[in-house]
Each structure stands twice: as structure tokens, then as C-alpha cells.
Length: 336
Image (cartoon, rainbow, N blue to C red):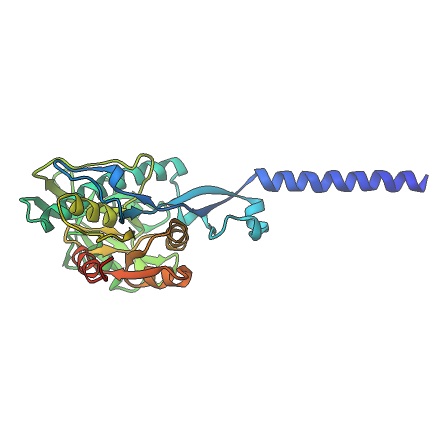
């Protein structure tokens, strides 16, 4: 009788463990996971009228990050995650009140704007006649749990903050970052052709309690007219972080030897004045670039570059602050 009891207890224990493992392997945890993806050549994604044949040696590469919902097993057993993957909280991916599907849709819109801005920057650098006038920071989404949610709307264009003119998203970040979290900041904005004034209270950034934010996601609002039609298509890839490799590839296809025979991977959001600003997922992008066998990796200067160096191994990381600087440093590489 005792042996039979132990037999059933063992079976019950095995069944319980199997159920727990099954649930952990299939049930989402509510968080997300950033997973490295390989770097890919940009040339096959960009079409410039009159472009020459791509150089067989070298090339410009972009790198993205795969985003997936994390299972409980991913959280509880770290060594089962893909090499270089990281668990990130939901608030780092979607704003409060925003669905995952909304975030993906917004990322595709951001990509479209990034493509246009990158083409404008490259054409201007090539001496082409481009109309590219930054007109402010376009509000794309607003966190529902910040004071700005009562004052701003999606589609507003912020043109001044704290008495400082705002023509680019980076200018807005600098203006708001100059106050203490909790302090009010006066905004001037454009809404459906009307000029409005709004005062909003700032909050602390989720990743830095000493940094003030207003809790909005913004992109570049601009009037852009290109003298030639540039086609860029990355399919389902979203977000603005491929702006720098886009611009480098367009400039190369305009007849300039940008890569000089090197496999050049790059990441960074690019603004109309050529400024390269920080992006997310640098750890995973560095893993992806290493796996692709790239010679160098151009990344935004500052924290992005520090993170990339931490995971780069033998890969050479080159920090850049602008498109012009990226072109200069590539020209100083030893000839291959």
C-alpha cells in the first residue's frame, strides 16, 4: 500500500512539474525581450536614380532588434535566452494605454519619416538642391499617466519649450532636460494651423529620476522636397534607428566611395541638420553586428558608444555625433 502511495505521489509530482514547465514556456510574462538580429546590407533596400553597381567588397549595413513577448521561462531561466538577449519591462516598449500593435504601427511611421530625412541629409551633403525645413517636434503618442496627457494631443507640433525655440526633437529634449523633474515648462505648439500655449508639469524619466521629461514620443516635423526620388524599403522593420546607414548608403549610391572596401555597420537616428542621436537596443545590435563579421560599427556618441564597446569584443566601435563626422572618420580608415 505504501509503495502504491509513493508511486502516485511521484506521478503527481512529475505531472505538476510538467504543468509548471509548460505554463512557463507558453504563458507571456507581461514583459518583452530584445533579441539580437544579424546586420544586413542596405544596398538591396535602397534605390537611387542612376546608381552604379554596388561594390563587391565592403558595403553599408543596418542592424535591427527582434522584439518578442517574454515568457515566464525566459524570465526565470536566463541561460535559455538567446545570446545577448535582454528582458525589458513593458513600459520601456509601450506607453501606458498603448497596445503592442499601436507601438508597431507607430514604429513603421517613424521609419518612413526617418527614410525621408536620411535621403534629404545625404542629398544635401552631395550638393543637391534640397528643401529641408525643420518645423518642430511632432507628438506621436502621449503617456496616459503624465500631466501632459491633459494638455497635448497626438499630432500637435511643439515649436518652443521653456522659452527656447524647438525645431527638432533633440532641441525639445534639451529644453525640457534643463529643468528639474516636477517643474512646469511652458510649451508653444501648433495644432491644426493654430498657435497655442500650454504649461505642463514635467515628470522624472523612468530610467533616470534626475532627468525631466513631459512623457511624449516625438518625431521630426518638417517640410522636405527632394530633387530626385529615393526609394528605401526595409519591409517590416520599424523605428528611426536606421537613419544613419540610410544616409550613408544614399550618399554612396550618388557616386561617393563611403565604405572604402570595409563592411560598415551603422545605427543612429538622424536629424535634418545631420545630427546623430541615440537609439535603443545597442547591446543586441552590437551582438548582431559582431555575428555579421562587420569591420567597423558606427554608433551615436555617448552612452550608446559606451554600451557598444562593452559588448564589442574585437569589433571596432566608432562613435559619431553627425553625418559629416561619420563620412570623415570613414575616409580616415587605412586603405584596404
